[in-house]
Image 1 (cartoon, one colour):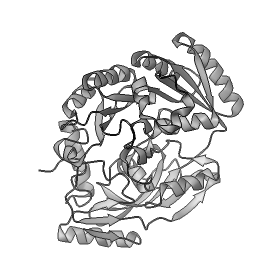
Image 2 (cartoon, helix red, strand yellow; image 1 turned 90 degrees about the horizontal axis):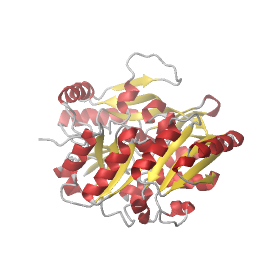
Image 3 (tube, one colour; image 1 turned 120 degrees about the vertical axis):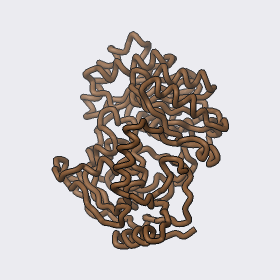
Image 4 (tube, helix red, strand yellow; image 1 turned 90 degrees about the vertical axis):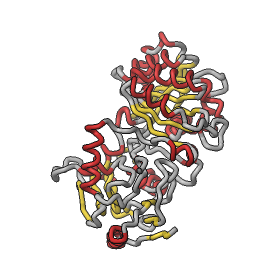
Length: 410
């Protein structure tokens, strides 16, 4: 396989134009940490962006950072953490889930668009992407957005690039909004709730005036994966429902106390503080109970997004029908489902149940043979599919970039 390691944006343009001329599709990668997500691609050429790793500018007082798309995510998060800042959407580290090394690059983070528990309050990846430089499937360099939050530059192409899995353009430089880290965090813990009761508790917390920044539920069966960061929850063997509050210490503590009283009808409320709380939420964010090396790691993993109020019933139905395990995030709006490694990954069942709940499902982890046989990403309805095809053709008419990653060809 030809690995084309570029040095700058000009190199990217030359490689893409050569690929167009030779009708040779390119697989676009940074560190390759998410290569196992998506349909297997038939290509003999890899466009490697890992050398595009510079921090172009960082202005902590302005809450913005500009980096090359191949910058290691771990380095960038360490840099902003040194200034007590963070990416508020909590990017998901798929290392444990996929069994591949490293959290990848900033460009991969944007291309995947996977946001963590704070999505319910802070929004998703695309809401924090202010600007980008990229090379389209025509081999043309373009710029979209800028370096301020309120930026009117015509079409907001940043929203399209986020979550496009590298199929529209090759990002070479991105500007992101950062936010101050909270001074304190408190997590309320309810034990022993079933999925439906937990869904009601999370809904009550999120609809309260106490500014909840995370709402998750881990059924007892999902805890047998042995994620070490979950040791802070104890060893009761019961399901746990988690509600997080953040802010200055006095405010977080006061709001936690008020929310605990609101949740009293659901049972006894325990509290985790600061470092212990942060470790538990990192495990939830990175789906560590379903880690590839863990007790549940042999199964396929689906990521199902649905209306939060429908999450409890949907997750329980999937677990009952397949004998699998589920984790709920986003107040029930995000379900991670680890299912037995059947040949078809239960695709028809998952999609049918998700559609009935007005949701959609993505196959995140599965053997390559399974990924060749099923649609990894949710098939789109006729009108939406037609619109998506027109958008894709306007960026990459010859399907040079990550051809076939988001849908089966032929």
